[in-house]
Amino acid sequence: MNVAVSNEQVSDLIVSVSPLSLSTSITEVANLFLSDTHRELLCLPVVEQEHVVGTISRYAVMRIFLKPFGREIYGPRSVEQWMNKTPLLIDEHTDIDTASHYVHQHITNPITEDFVITRNAKYRGMGMVLSLLELLGQRAARRNQTLMVVNRNLKSSQTRLIQSEKMASLGQMVAGVAHEINTPLGYVSSNVELVRGFAQQIQAAVVVSHELVTALQEGVVDDSTLGDLIQTTNEQTQMILRDGMLDDLDTLFNDTFHGLEQISELVVSLRNFSRTDHANFVSVNINESIESALTIGRNILKQKAEIERVFADGVMVECVPSQINQVLLNVLTNAAQAIPNFGVIKITTRSHKNFVDIHIRDNGCGMPESVRKKIFDPFFTTKKVGEGTGLGLSISYQIIQQHNGLIEVKSIEGKGTEFVIRLPRKRVVNTESLTNN
Image 1: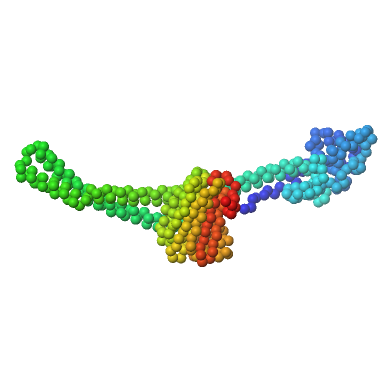
Image 2: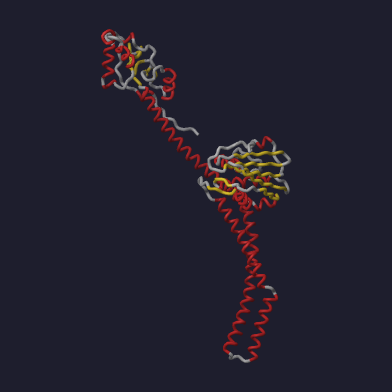
């Protein structure tokens, strides 16, 4: 991105200084340097017929006067003998960057020399090196401020892009997740209907039993009515016991709670996956992150592959969980889509001293080297138009980099692909080569 650069020119730095002539004496020059109007200048211009023929510096005058009897012997002499005959000359229309480069390349005594500003090769005024440096510093500060704004905007855009891709990935999972929720929801609903039927029968038995107890307590009913109540109560009770309703209720409740737990698990996984996080690093168990990603992608994965888990213990890392979940989901769904019919996806976690490795390997179609080299490039995809954004793996790569981690892919065409993700245990850890143990 280009950063706007101001168009200051050397003319902005002109200091109006009356030039010296070749006949000006050293003593006169010394007196000028001592005056208030010239106290900040390092040198004065010597001009003949509007053309600059040299400069005399404050440092040169000081060296003259430090000689034995320098003021008395050399003071009356003209500047011509002592002046710098190759001064720095810069046209007033020169831009600041060019002038700065010129001064840097040609200045011989940075502490003692200023430059002369000209117009059409004629004397225009003086320019102070310190003023040039100050202006460059101000421009650098403005550029730095602009770059900070650009960087903030870039980070904001990157965050929105990551969230957009996350929601796009989530959108692709919605139908599958809806199916996954409908399955337990279906038998929860069926179980509730059965329980309601059981409850009605139990309610009828309770009502009859209550009438019998009331009749016995009050003793006001005849034997025939009492017999009928006893018979009805017995029939209702026997029917409940014979049909095994009480045992079925326990099973139905267990199944219902299991279904509700599955729904809850899916909802929590969706919430964790879709929320926006801003560098909220926390310590998580990578095995649990993998299980969360498997839950979100369950509907796609179960149709394409058997999942094999080889999980190590002690795989805690400091990370932004939802971002790592997004990476894992992207890699897992890519693995499933690479399997033509039905295959195997093997997920292995390995614990090391300073980092944790995640290996996700499929026995799908693999990819040629020309494709493998590009899979992390933004917008690169081998899918048909409309089936992929080409951002999933690119954003995954950025996320792992931001975690000071590594992500690599190995693939053999026709045999399968393996992604290797390395995450440091602590937020700031030097990454190591994937070949090191």
